[in-house]
Image (cartoon, rainbow, N blue to C red):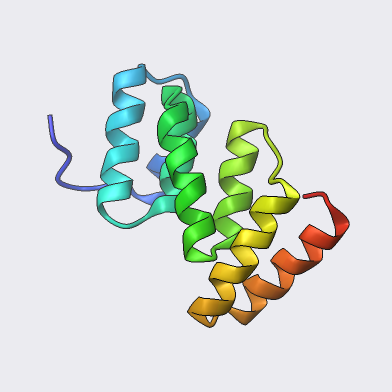
Length: 114
């Protein structure tokens, strides 16, 4: 069953806070991803146990130079970004002109922690 409309913010919050069948959580995640709303998809991917999709999204965050998304996915996976991931993200962010994310990634790489 395809969703034609995403939940409003309050409905989304309620869905995130309650138990969902895995198929429903995955369907919601795919709907958010299809709408280009990757951050909002993360919670539903976690609920669906879609670790392969979270790994792919983590790689996308690094390739796109998106430090915020990397942190969000890493939190959902309970696996902090590595120094190498931060370094790769810094390079991607620099190429994309995302100076704030590049700077943050460089700081995190130097610290060696999230």
